Amino acid sequence: MFQSLQALPADPILGLMASYRADNNPRKIDLGIGIYKDEHGNTPVMAAVKKAENSILASQLTKSYVGPTGAADYNDSVAKLLLGTTLVDSLGKRRVTVQSPGGCGGLRLAAEFIKSANSGATVWVSDPTWANHMPLLGSAGLHIDQYPYYDYASHSIRFEEMLACLGNIKAGDVVMLHGCCHNPCGADLSQEQWRQIRNIALQQGFTVFIDLAYQGLGDGLEEDVYGARLLAESLPELIVVTSCSKNFGLYRERTGAMTLVTDSDATTAIATTQIAAAARAMYSMPPDHGAAVVQLILNDPALRSEWDEELSTMRGRINGLRAQLVKQFKAASIDEDFSFIKREKGMFSFLGVNVDQVQSLINDYSIYLVNSSRINVAGVNSDNIDYLASSLAAVLTT
Image (cartoon, rainbow, N blue to C red; front, side, top):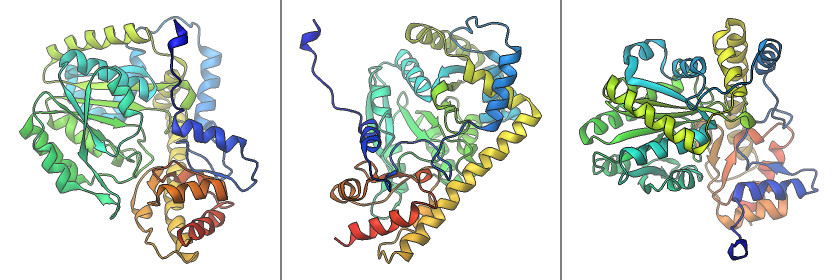
């Protein structure tokens, strides 16, 4: 039976990782994989996470199942991190939060739920969007379409075109938005733009689906959820998927959640049975360790304060690197205007170079990035920024 299988192409980013590891150039730079790195190029375990893990190791008495919807205390804690205690209380039983195996697991769980609610729904994603959105949503059998979002020439949001497209989307369809730190372009919606999207969602009746993987890495924990909270308090329906991979550094622990808001307590109760059934059918139960770590950090004042400080340091480093990149590119006598990098948020931006230039950066200079020219800003440090700037200058003048 298996002899009929055809080999699939390697994932572009995972393939890039393999090439980077095999490269013997001591000046090589990895700007491809989407993980946070410190000044030394490491992705360390956060100190608050280490302390929480030690506490759990000493006190945990069982490894029994947590159930398809996950640990209730974790779900409550991440809901409050997302929405705030006041909004969680006001939404009451209209809101449910379900633990998932990472953000990816939450996205796929949400896709299965959307499919059960409306098998004919189209999910509209931004152009561009994170590459894995397509297989995660499409594998559930959902139809996917795109709305205009990023202008590669001006490095800005095509907001009027986006609004025009949203104005033609019907009730029963789903519009996915990046909650903050847009991956791959880094161009985020302003508060006024979020308000306009709220208005058009109310007018059209479509359901909004927010992917929020970077809370705290843009402008701050509260600032980065302005849009999610606005829509949660304003719309009859909302789906939000959150991830603890980046802001807690729990990449391999697969710790995430899906939060659902509906128009009534009764509808949410029914929806919860559908979500639990989908989780049971796909992975049975979510893993516990990462969720236990997050729950403890968010509910222990000392650990919460330490985590806040660590996250603030990470955010400050990313935003500082953005400003430094603009300065270094200018110092390298690059004529092109890269000031947009400083304006954008989170770990990612497009350099705006073409595929041939990307390949030259990889093959001639051992600077690894995907063909779209998306870079992980956190892959830059004081040891490699001059080399990056001079290499880019050479490629742009060739």
